[in-house]
Image (tube, rainbow, N blue to C red; front, side, top):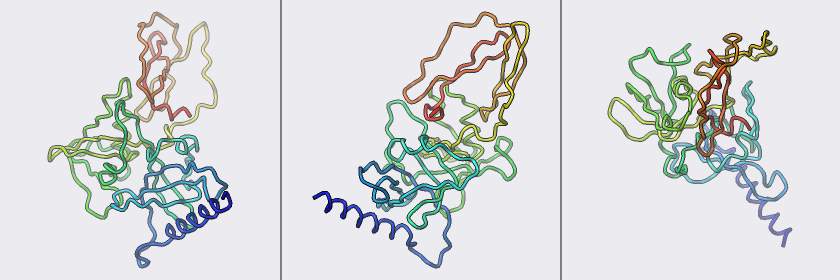
Length: 284
């Protein structure tokens, strides 16, 4: 019976791999597409099991494509623990399926929302990303914002503002969320809003994060019983702001919602901790 079951798994895997490497229109060049991902948790030997199932974003076809492995081609490598063990379809990847594998250039993960469960069937056709101005990391100085539907050849939509329901998450850094949206380092689902604006419902942030911060190779050493303090920009990069003597601090420590972990760094003038709630998967 075990041999028969393994044989069935093997045949099914071969069929899925063959279908994943066959394009619907051979005349079209192979380009990167966005896919929602879930990990194959079946208990059998690779390559029959242990890969990933993919759903093509903006496609009405609910058929899942099986790939044996996910191979990263970006110079900024994402830890496997940050995407492999995510809940089903809480990860979106941008890549190309070839020879039974997917080569990805970008990986995004869903920000948890309290009392909300992401439903891929309801959201599959509502994914967008922001088109950042060329040579810029944000579009704060532009009068309109262009958002592009994923896996679509339709012209971008122009809106004057983007509202983000994730701002309601307790102690989440708002400037960080805005940077992720404005710089194109996120994909998101939107709900219908006013003609000149739109609202982000579910937001997937690009990984790794932070991405462009310089590494601090030498620890800051302060003298005379002082301690280092820092500031943080919208990209979550820390910058040394000087040494200070510790002083009294407000006794307020946030309790982060499910899926989030408390983070802090000391700030001026008294080296008090500056708290925020960040997605727990960033520390995995």
